[in-house]
Structures are given as structure tokens and as C-alpha cells.
Length: 117
Image (cartoon, rainbow, N blue to C red; front, side, top):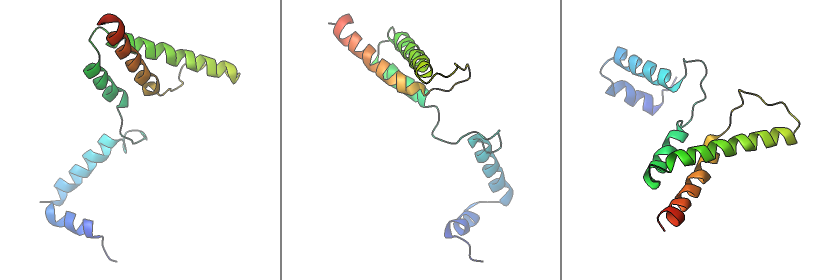
């Protein structure tokens, strides 16, 4: 059976098999392969978006952006469940970044037009 070229290169470059196996174990455990079936993706998008908020907004407007995003997400969830005639679930998952990005923009406009202008 012919081995892929990358596998041959990997075997030549790693100093020992134990070290390679340890690295693969750490990689897969951190990616969630052995931690209960975590869905793999880029992850921590809200944290990255909060970093953008910190770069664009004044420190007094960041809590306002989070509050606007949270309230708009809550309102959108309740409205969608009422329209679809479904029960509200405390464990429902919402994409917070979808609401956080417009809230950052609204607070940026608020800061530029009202507070500094």
C-alpha cells in the first residue's frame, strides 16, 4: 500500500514516534475530538468580535453594545417563537455575533454623532 507524501515527510521530520503521538493527542484533545463531540470550527467568534468592539468603541460604549445585542437577540428569539407558535426554551442557542455586530455599529454611530459631535 502506497503512503501519502505528507505522511512520509511527517515521519522523517519528527524526532520520535512518542513525541509525534503526544502532539497528535494534544491536538485532537484541544480540538474536541476526545472531549464529548464538540463541533469543530474557528470558534470564539464572539470574543474576536469583542476585540473589534474594543478597537472601535470607547470603553463606556462597550457595555451598551453588549446590552443592545443581548436585548435584540432576546426580542428576536421571542418574536420568532411566537410567530412559529413554539414554546420558549431556556437552552436555545442563538448566534450572538449576528446581533453583536450591528450593535457595535449602532454604538459607534452613537459615539461619533452624539457623544463627540
